[in-house]
Image 1 (cartoon, helix red, strand yellow):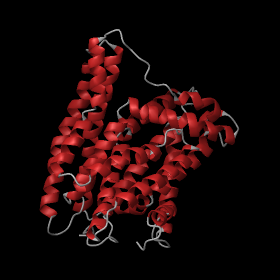
Image 2 (cartoon, one colour):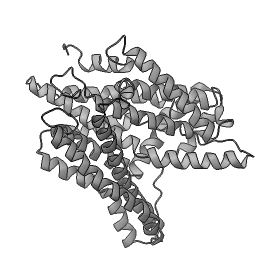
Image 3 (cartoon, one colour):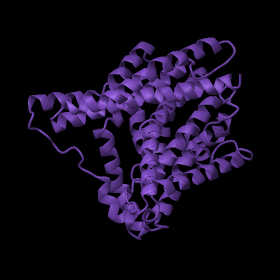
Length: 394
């Protein structure tokens, strides 16, 4: 099998393809959202208006909360690989990893100049949780991940709402709406200043209030556990065990996702307290997105391994340069939709925006294929790698 991992230079190509799929989903979703600038033209066409709505609903159904979850899962797996290779050499990866997170934080700050809603800063901050759990037993890590996925903060809020039904404290102190004047304005400098401060604070505030912090930490640990168990690395010896595992995952996660999806409106309708309702929505959506994400991951991997990646392999180069993809999406996306650039937020509804996203994706995909014919790593990946392993041959 192509995904046998025998040395630190080998790639798990199914995971590269899966990461590429997640980045594609993030790209398309960001385009219809105009990169978090919710400004759209009015349309007089009934057909186009209906098409816009259906495409919007479909894209959010497929990718919202799921693509990011896949990305977080694979972040934990990547940590496992790097930590494992260091341990085989008799080295401790901790300091290198913390330095690597600091570098990621720098990439995140650069990305935040163009996109008020980026996730690299969040990943750099939350990624620290992998350090204290990296040497714990599988059972201990699994229980911690399970506890975090339960969204303990939201249950504390729910308890508070039950004790004081009149309470409804303000949770969003910073809002992305606060940067809309700069996103729609014509000054690149003013936009970058607003994004870097208010936009980033709004993004982190949203992540904290809507369960993304606890979910991300949990998914990091789950990804690390899947790496420990070798459940992403298909080879002749483990084929039957791994295939059976992911078949069980889809058998459990699919009915769970369906049940969570169809029960949510009924559950929400039974809650009158707005503060309690907000917490229950965060908990429920977190669980639903987890279940649906597992459906996507298991389906993708089973199809890849069944067909030796004949179709999905096209995404491998795209997934191998996911950091470069993500940052360039933000830079070019802001140029396309924001006021300092082409201002297409004034002219593109959901349908036209998703078409732009598809073209954008195909161009990035073609560039990735060209790049890896000439270079070993993506542009930003090369910088990240060299700085991570500075003063050391790796």
